Image 1 (spheres, one colour):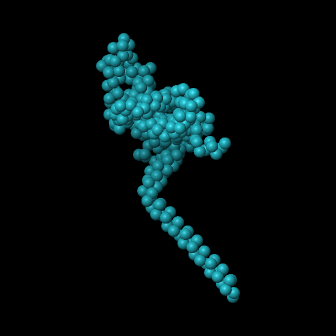
Image 2 (spheres, helix red, strand yellow):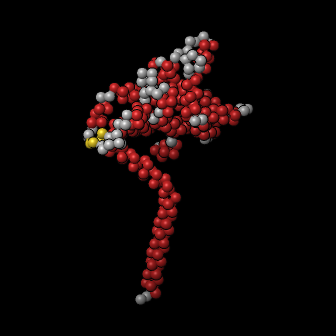
Image 3 (cartoon, one colour):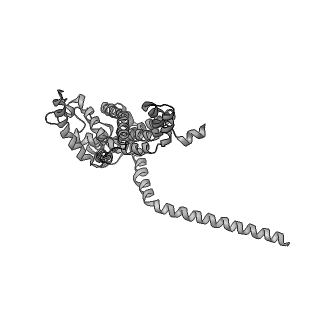
Length: 318
């Protein structure tokens, strides 16, 4: 063998050994990574994905978890669409969800006010965020008192300005508006997210707009809104999902009343599953809620191309 050919074979062997060692090190790193996330991964597979699959199977059975389940096919779904209380709970949930855009707007306005560098502004930021750390049950009980038709603070304040306060949670027409009013209590948690988005807007964009003679509204429309639109989109998506899953406030404050005026989908699911032990029927209802949230979320994602601005992606498209 010539020295040149021998040297070439040795180099090829060394390269293969180096590639093999690199692959082994990468595999070892991946195994270590999976080991660290294994508690979450096991919890997801067993407690989330596993229970979802089980509930999907259970939705095709008549089951009370105390006797043998009976296969009924799609009867649970057929019965669901004939259930007047299901449609009532769906309408109530959509009514409550319709307030999500208003919460986004209010949160953005508050964030823009708190984004100014004024004396004591950090204290006000803290005050606005504090309600977000209070327990949900405590908030519900507090607002039960605030919205009491006779001695509640809200009606007392309205009385001072000459307005006769409504019955709020005690009447069908004002019960859901009362819950919507209470939901604005936690707007401070989204204000913090908006503040982060506003403070991430480059200052030179405002300076360029001012040089072009832009006023306050023009700067908001051309600079602020496009730059914080991903943050608003995130808040809109999470708000939509959270509003379709509303349960605690209706369960604690009204129990779905009066006359099912605040009966929501998840509260109705709770009644069917844990009060009447119709687990198959409740599982079918859970999957209907899942599909509704999925469809609405996909619609928002598709519509986001019209109003959400991603700087890197948009520059690539251009």
